[in-house]
Length: 65
Ligand code: SF4
Image (cartoon, rainbow, N blue to C red; front, side, top):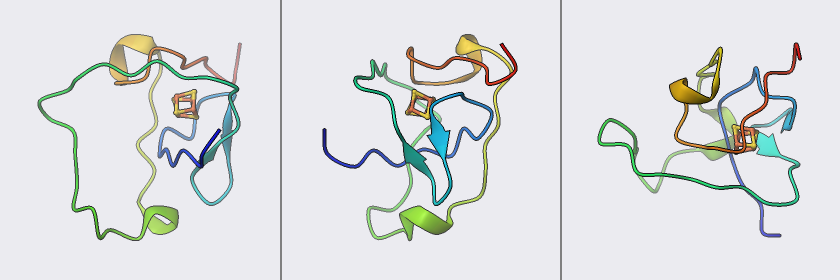
């Protein structure tokens, strides 16, 4: 799978440098999402989520179980 950069650092699949280690992900549209394609992906600020409804990614699993 190509590198997937993600700032949801409360997900069990999240890794340092804003990388996702899931084998597959499901993403839905979000009118509030998006950033410049030139952004430094590894340096984006964290955007923690408590549950799947707070993310665009439907593969999210809370790292706390
Ligand atoms: S929220 Fe989605 S993209 Fe982000 S680390 Fe979790 S599974 Fe990967």
